[in-house]
Length: 238
Image (cartoon, rainbow, N blue to C red; front, top):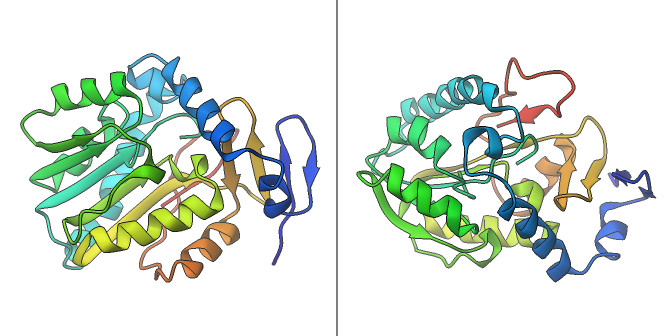
């Protein structure tokens, strides 16, 4: 099913492909990076002024991670990529999710984050459990085969165009150990897609997200909606 969508200026597009055809890939990613380079390296800065939601977010994330652990997921190594925002751990941000979620389960965590000031702070805060820190964009990450029990990607897929999202999922599969999982936690639109021109993000419908997972030949083992977030925000699904 082809879904239509809008950008933040109110312009309608009859399909996501018709939107991507109007965009320069380089300009799209550059706009996003420049936006996040202006944000303060604090929880409130990472969460777009909604820092008070951090504990609520962490509680729900731990629930799904503990379900995966109970199903037999390994506990030795995770990759954290979370670029937080009221809309956006594969941007590790300042390590909020790695510290409060992943470190509760995994003995070692790698960080992936394109903004140097964020990843430097995260690596300093989490020095006892951080393995490697990668200062690069998600779409440029180089595969390390069969390394991770879990790859946690929170509030990041909205910053990838569809082709790079699929390419990342292919690389993520190769990076997982047998029995490993990739967790994607992100905003989901109630219908179609919504483009935020300020930070160059695309919020897709649940159907669009599931179609991308299917095209990448992933099976969805668990699905859960984040609870107790304000109604004026996009729904968040894991």
